[in-house]
Length: 236
Image (tube, rainbow, N blue to C red; front, side, top):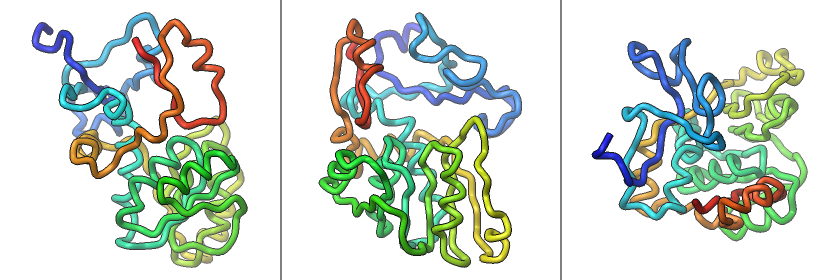
């Protein structure tokens, strides 16, 4: 569409049937790079105009965080106000969830990578490198099959667990413990872009310190090989 040519945009990744009220939960949905739609590493990819948000007013290095930040902010919608939170996982999503929650909740992040944990402490997050204690709320963002079981283990009776990871195989979760301890287990997936864009535009949340490097598109193989950081951006 001519009105959109040359504009800086971000795109919501779920494309529904057009009838379901929320495309995230449409049984016939297509998902960019995941289900029925080529992703951004293809030679070309498509999204409907309805999925696009203009972000010409934002720095591109901020705007690129919109989709994962929307997913991170969705976690806060499910938590009791002010509850203390343990986040499992020191990857990009775990870090974003910590940044998104820390203004409203006491947050501690459990991870394994010393360099990542040091960077997160510099951003004002408390960290742990070993599981310990019982927590009133646990957010699982490990990206592993074992993460849910660890969340159940670390959640105190009548606590809340928010699950973010989707994995190829499910780990063994002690459902007896879920029942006996009356745990509230909630799934959280993609979030709406509106709150994420508002947070970025207001300066309330700045994810740019999580960027490790910006490389030219021609150096794409080097970017893919990069390990141990949070985010490598490609410059087109």
